[in-house]
Every structure is written in C-alpha cells, then in structure tokens.
Image 1 (cartoon, rainbow, N blue to C red):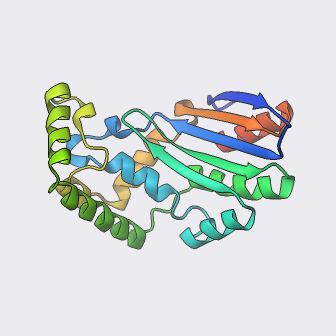
Image 2: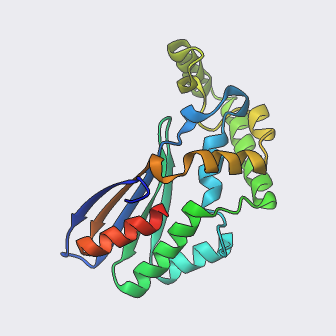
Image 3: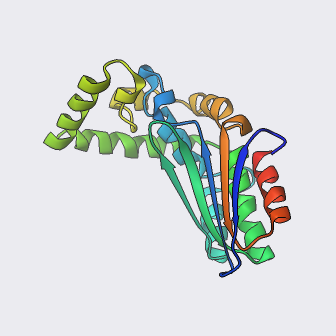
Amino acid sequence: TPQGARVYFVENHDLPMLDVSVDFSAGSARDEKSKSGLANLTRHLMGLGAGEFSERDIAEKLADVGAVLSGRLDADRAGFSLRTLSGKAERDQALSLLGAILAAPRFDAAILEREKARVIAGLEEAATKPETIGAKAFQTALYGNHPYALDESGEVESVRGLSRDDLAAFHRGHYRARNMVVALMGDITRQEAELLATGLAA
C-alpha cells in the first residue's frame, strides 16, 4: 500500500465470502522482561473497544452481519482474522469494525483491570501445574535471556504493573503500516482489494 504495508490477494468468486488476515511484527518477543505480557494484553484489548464502538457494539455488530473476528499472538507476530460475507453492506460493516480495532483501540481502564485480573488468575493457576513449570524451565534453558524465553502471557508481577499508557505506547510503536502484512482471499475484485487494504493500513 502507499503506507508501506505488504498485501497478498487471492481472488475467488466460488462463495460469497471474504477472508481478511492482518498481521504485525508485534509478538511477545517485543516485550521487555519487566513488562512481559504487554504484547498479549495489547492485542487482546484492541478487540474490546475501539473508536466509536464499545466492547458490546463490536460483538453485536459482528453478529448482525454474521462475521467472525479472531485474534492470535506468538513470539514474533500478532494479528487478527476476519471472515465476512462479501455483500457490500455486510463487508463494509465488518471492515469498519476491523479498521477501528487496528487504528483506534480504546484500552478502557475498567476493561484493562478486568482482563489483567483474568490473566493473573490464569497465571497463578498455571503455576501449580507441573507441565507449566517444566515448559518454563525448558524455555529458559533454551533461550536464556533472549525475549523468546518470556511467557506470552507474562508473569503475575509484570502483568499487575501494566498500565493503559503501556498498552497505548506499544500500539503506537508496533501497529503501523510498516509492520503490517494484509492477506485477502475471496469474493472481491483486485480494485476492491486495493481500496480495502489501503483503508486498513491508513
């Protein structure tokens, strides 16, 4: 795109569907040890309120048009996948939500505290399981001080210390067109794909 995002497009009109995948170089290896879990929490909260849309708005508007939004994160990358009907009304509504999530996440304070509590509870429970303890020891032995040794979900103390400013700064630094790869497949034309990708990268 003009903004620097890479785009891959496969045109297929067999079904009235469109699949959109957007990935960023924003995985957990971008975390500092003192803020481990930041990449994961940032990606997760992006889908829980953005722009003019509340958490509930996003869920309801996706359901209204039968669209499915999912997220993912590993050590290297973070991203979202959207599947929607390719009709203009359904497609435009689903893509407006995805665009807001990518460009203008709210990181609402109340939702951040709720999700931090959820992550911390999961970490505390995981810490009682031998398989989790063994996996963490293996990662540390394998990677040492490299960020790949960090737990994607973070540590209890690092997650507890994360603030809205931390999430906003991580988003500003990593969720940009230069770090973006867009993949489009489905029932749209090349011209429509170019407009769509340019809009998402704006």
